[in-house]
Length: 453
Ligand code: ADP
Image (cartoon, rainbow, N blue to C red; front, side, top):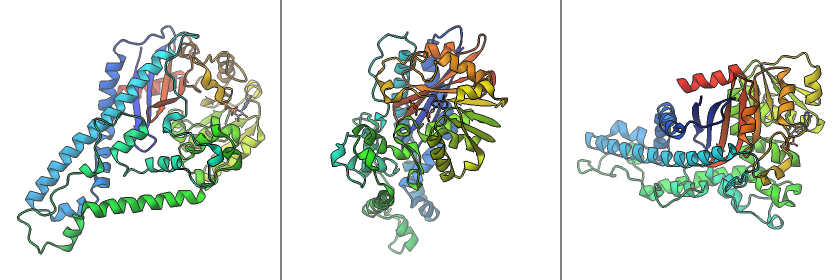
């Protein structure tokens, strides 16, 4: 039995998640899964969010529209209507194009994950290379944002041209892209217009040059604001590997510059915020245990969807950082920070939470070097099966955050006999970042209901 679900967010980095429901007995894919996903998931996504997306883009691109349309003559209205039709066509084609690229990657990643341990995993890029950042020499890094960083900050700016966006996404720019200069607008003056048109009308039809200048100004303001607070810590400047994590700090914590604390280890292991939000939506419940909370990226998001969060970590320093980070998001009061070894905690506690989230150590960034990540051999402090046994003492509803190259057959094998699990692939832009597996009837049922809608 297979089912699919697609969700996405439209701000940068763009986030997509695809998921499939598997039976324990069969880890095979339905031959029609991709066709089904392409049709049904796209359609339901577009029905759900498409119009809002088009409107949002329209008002960003033509801020003068609202005022102009009130005063528009019949001829002008027809011109605006024509422009809207073109806008809707271009934007949906553009979004479909990106969606198709991510889907192609998903197909490859899914097939690779379903190969047996030891088989070659083809063409895997670095886990965190999704921002297309040029490696900067640490010795030349300044305390201000580097050029690569500037480029990333700009990607958060919706006014970026499509071609530039495609470049940053690592997608082909030869088709589907349209330069910002190509914007077609109703003519400033239609033949019927008189010289005495109202000031507001004139204003609303501001010329392209002014608009570009305005764009540039607002970008400059955004950049200055963030630069002010962006000081690269010394320990990062001395470390080429860490420097690339610095460039994506706002995708880890959108409130990064308000005082987020991360030690060296946490930079590698914290879950990017959009993925943490998605996991929190899926695991929404009364009481949740975050078994390896680290610096709190997941616990913060659980606090927004759950009644109470029990955040456990074996390292006191991590808990102190998690608490500070949670207070920046205004949710520290909803989290109990527990200093404990989760294995011991699971053996002794009487707590029966509604869900548990497992994000155990993957063994540092070296896990990326493994073509197929063996979840029984390589996870710490225990293999996946005994770790699940510990968690199941507390509840059947479990979310398991795993490396993107995890062997999916092993992930499916963790399901109870006669039950199903859901395997979710999380993409930032077009790159797979991690896999989240969900176990427990009520969790997988929730997913099925969503898919069936
Ligand atoms: P990664 O290998 O993915 O970088 P980390 O080494 O950062 O992961 O580990 C994630 C978190 O799990 C850390 O904050 C660490 O202190 C915590 N941790 C490790 N072992 C245990 C344990 N037995 N019980 C609770 N927390 C643990």
